[in-house]
Amino acid sequence: MNDKKAKKVKGSLKISIVMGSDSDIEIMRGATQALQQFGVSYEVHILSAHRAPDETAEFAKKAGKRGIRVIIAGAGAAAHLPGIIAAHTEIPVIGVPIASGVLQGKDSLLSIVQMPKGVPVATVAIGNAYNAGLLAVQIIAAGGIKTDLALLEKLRQFKEQLRKQVLSKKADI
Image (cartoon, rainbow, N blue to C red; front, side):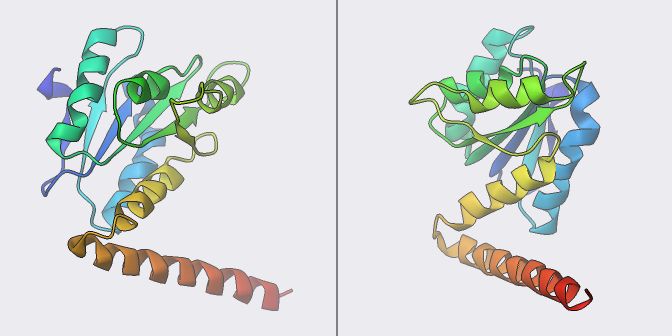
């Protein structure tokens, strides 16, 4: 893997964000925003299931050994990146379908959702990388490791804040 294509945030790595092209950076920024909101360290890679399949498989195989606990993979069109990564690792993979072409991401969504039994990829809405980041935080927090109990509390507070926002909007009607 070409380390020049990897961006790393200081701290013990927990999340890896992967995308097939630098044209996906703006969409995938939502995942980095969610992770930064909760203080979770991450790295960012550009890999391609089609143009760099060997490097993509190698990345996935070594991710767990490097301390990565969740991989977020964004892909458009045929959107094979999340599935290829999931096929080569035991750690959770979250797919982010990215809008492209005439189908505006519906093709990506279906490609990511329709994984065969035994190769799961969690999937969020088209372009919703923020939710992918948030789901990654929830997965880590649910692990129950002492250092992550504080993260779980942050998630609880976040969800309580969301609940209050919804209830306050209902009151305004």
